Image (cartoon, rainbow, N blue to C red; front, side, top):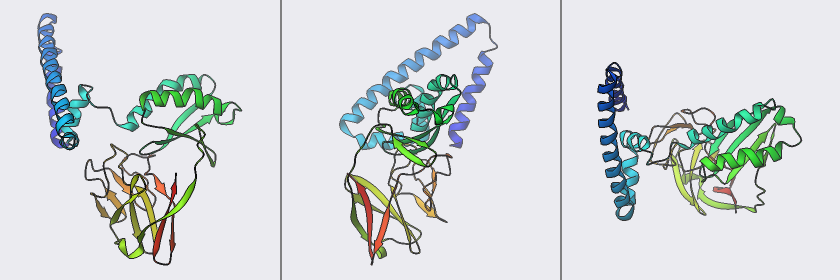
Length: 270
């Protein structure tokens, strides 16, 4: 990260110098910059196409690098982080809500497909708030984040999906208590999802095995003092609550856990 900041600082320093040149000199510098950027983007585009066809895991590993990700993001070859795209969507609809003395705020992102939002001000008590959310908030968020299919309005103490979603839930045995080492996490397969289990004494928590940043697995990270640090981009989470310590307001998707005897059960919604 320090290396990336140094490179960005160098670029900004040269941009400041060029800004003081006369117009003709600046046009030449800008033209050269655009030509080089176009060449780099074309090369990166071809590289990505090749890696997608031949070695997608290598591509994912490459994007895990901060500098590679920053360059690809600059050329619009990867999507911005999910949290950034959600905030962009909310910023787009905020003026419409504020014109009715209301507003909207992001409550939590729960990968891979759930986001919780909250109407505040007049909108939170408006009889048509559900309609407002369905037609405005949901559509705008999906425009920027098509991977989100479960958009939930959190008002007061109740959670109500914007899209009706009737589910059948059941309990699934996933491990024995002694299988979960203290001060570490155990990764298990739960139907179509990977989850992690964390045990602190008699208390066991279960979360989806996906960092809220880019969805990388968390079980490869390190655990210390009830905090897990993602190995990919060092996002940190409190394993007692699932709360993200790096980005306030973001949490890991949690699952309800029950223990019967020495068997651990997790509630699954199908």
